[in-house]
Length: 433
Image (cartoon, rainbow, N blue to C red; front, side, top):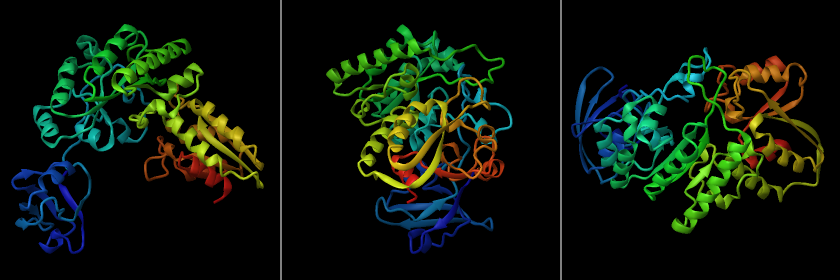
């Protein structure tokens, strides 16, 4: 994919030298531009030679003089101009291998691109990096990165990832540490495989690399009902979740004493599985892995506690339903109970069972239109239902099974309102503001 220019800022340097939308940036000072990172790194100099391809096919060489770090004023079609680096692993718990057929094609793409890790916080394994990738990470100081570790034992990690190169994870993490690259790590916990003593050894080994290893997130393996031909795995039991919480809290106590920082954190799912309250906000430190489902429930509850101070005692009569996945019920019940103390307001939870993915998938973000329609039937015609935006494709109202918000409205007759999963958005929707 070329570095296609889609916008040139008016009166910018690019505008002054004659660049226009539709041009393609080929190189800067002879350096090929493969992504937005290359562009920002090489464009900093005060003297540049740009090589471009015009829309008519002509090749231009343009010399530019500017202030150091001054931008050219260009916007590109995408952040990656070459092909995304796909994963060559065969992880025994890979969620993509467990997807049913007929979802969006993009959902089947296995991403192991270090650029997505730096730009978006996607977890990568390091086992698919080439030497030129390592050189770019270190030269450009792409920090922090998000690394899926799972285990430090070489043979075990190679088995988990289905890749012999995965066994050199200690050396890879040490290389990042020596280069001053910070990383946030995760362990996808598979009971009977990388838990117990193996888990403790992994945590201990990662802690030795602090502060380069800035956090350790523990997330239970996610399994769907579409595992035909795949290795047999199971999810954690309630008693195992409780043991895991005790282990995490024990390490946090030790690390706070030694490092002044908790370092290791458990996914919200672990606490919900064990029937335990989520930790207090301070126990998550700076919430380093909230996008990994670690602490997102606590943030929501604490935000609501602040908003609660401004709730009215009564309001015009109104009845609403809040749609959610099954795993979030305990968090929602506490909030619904408080809101229903407002005279005139009637709120109900509307949990949706995830039959589309089967297995034990219960998170809200993986709900599909077909399961929502099945849950609603015709029983909610004309009723107001709040739907979390996290179930939709970013920037669109399309769900994982390519059904739209409008499809659900037409099938159910319900009045649907998509909201952000924040306390303020919830209260604004309820109050009609």
